[in-house]
Length: 156
Image (cartoon, rainbow, N blue to C red; front, side, top):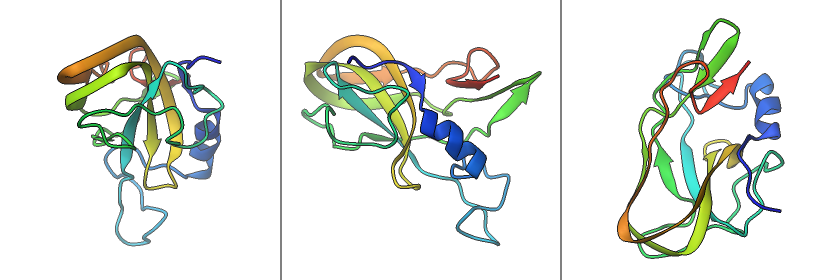
């Protein structure tokens, strides 16, 4: 099975359970009754031979890329934009592009998994951008505009 773009099914359920705090803090956290906190998110890259998609429930090193200047688990995601809505669509996008600096990743990879490292590495979404390699360069995954229909996560 190839990697496929999807909002992870487990994430949809976990949203209703209050397991994720995306963006700027607007509610009291699950971990503190007096001081709201935002969850830490990470973004890991996966080989074309991995099998990520809607059924992915958590970060795993299985199928993850390896190479110069790439650390297992990926990079931190800037999680400062609060989820919002327009009409009947709720949406959210990380507040900065994902930048893997001066990496060499010579085995073909095609997907990024964004996951919640604060909450037991629970999977949020998989995005497949097509097969690529990087030799001693920066890989930048530019985030779409944070609007209904264009945000990274849209729930209609």
